[in-house]
Image (cartoon, rainbow, N blue to C red):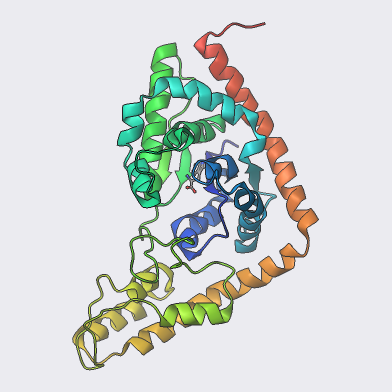
Length: 333
Ligand code: TRP
């Protein structure tokens, strides 16, 4: 049985939120049966913009692993592994840096956005600027052909494929496969304040582990249509965070379409649409929160899952490293 390989992952900078769920976790759950799936706890990549706080990066490894397991990632079908413990990834990164220019890295739209968001100015950590080459190493080391990620990651997959094509052309062999990004149709979820990006550091996210009260308060505080002052007024759907989230999470598209029409006509208050969204989110997150609480009591189990997965990933990534070194024709001892 030849199933396509998936590699994807998350920086370990804190617990995951519902944006991650809509953006990639839901897809990863679906792929468990049809693909050979690897999930990378990307702690070395997390360090590229968190070198001042390695303690956070370390602590978050378990948090992200707990989130994976709590949403239903099954370690029997998906391999969860730890980036810093896979030396082949670091070695491939060094090799790939010779197949990408600084100018190309600086032009990467994801990198440009992130540099702006982090306020690096001219003081960009070199590791950060170069992480697209490291991410190319992650993807190719597993020989992944499918990468389910949020839409912000698409330029990284493009840059991965450029490196792959360059190495294949240089060595005149298909040493590495190209990969395809799978991006959810809902696009990236905005923060509850309507700001472009949901992020833990922005304080505008709903964590997968959020308590029922936190969920309730977050939905109540959610940005809607600032001109929708009275219930009778027509309301706007576009840019209205409640409807954006309903689009992502409402399991009844028919009912939602009707709700939107009523809101646009006028006569439907924000409290009604918020009540619907809150009920949906409470129902989605209650079982995740319960499983997470249970798993966090058993740290030994979570560590075993990461250890076993990393062991399996080590063999696979090491084999690719050898192939690339051979193809490049480096000296053999
Ligand atoms: N860049 C991803 C993030 O910001 C994490 C990541 C690291 C990743 N390596 C990857 C995603 C490989 C997909 C494939 O969370």
